[in-house]
Image 1: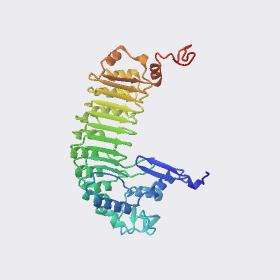
Image 2: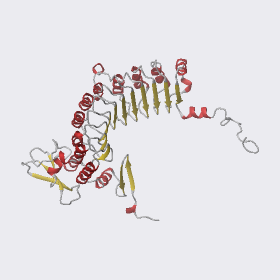
Image 3: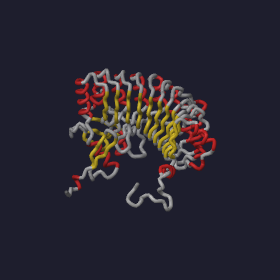
Image 4: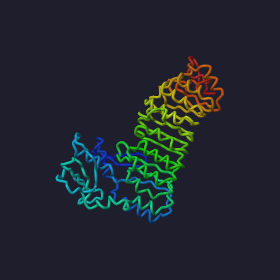
Length: 427
């Protein structure tokens, strides 16, 4: 049946968040507005969380997409402020000395056209201030935050996944003293921009000291935030960092995580461009498993610093990481206690670079090499072949061509003049 253009819908999905788009969503700006229009208003979300807290005081697991829009000030600065203007800060208080009311008013997220968010410009300082008429005191009072209410009512809450997380959100959950598994998602490309910082991580570290597993995505944190987590959350065993990672120097803070066993870097555009002098880096002595998934490893200095801090690991897994050439991968030879080495989709790596690291691993027991196209069977040396014989587990599929030749061995397929079918059908 022919449908009108207005009835055409596209479902835009990222993990647990789904948004319906139509033909009017043709660029990032319009897509962002469609996402915002379909989000719950803060007042509605708070009301629902309070009902949840009253109804289920024994709640143990919770996932919330917090739509308080802590990033609204950044968007308004883009729309209102000139790119050359100096923006000192944003505040929800109305200063008494404001002389000029500048552009735009937006309908408030509670759905009431009478509630408008205004941006005011101070002629003296050039500071932009966001003012929410009618809901100013409610939004500023952290006790009215729905997450804060759940934190005070649900003392048994152990697992929390929080999207669009901000420093305010982390302040709100500070009463959750029994949290053990936490996943925090700040900014997600083309969906929302709401990063949390070292301030929020410090609040989380000091209040939720029983953390065992922590996932951080889309944050603007650095050495200070991770150091606070390591010093306060002494039972932390697993840490996942994704989406650009931390700011410069965060690797040095890993030494504070005394019980950390698993570190996973996922979708990081860089490791740590400025890790500092290697002689000043500590060691994460309890770390056993290091996983890098879809990371840009052209940052040789950051990768070298990470290998040095993680020198005691037992398992090293690199999956679909680009930029991993022989020179960069040679830093992995520092981890001499590795028992499992897994490489998948690391195309720049050659057989010579792989051999240099493998021969340095005297305790290696398992090796997996999959889809590393520059690793060739014909280039395997006798020393490397001997090392293969000592392994307990070997998965060797460096490229599709080698896999194809192995799978066709003995079948007669692919041989010139070979016959597959006989008269009367296959035997």
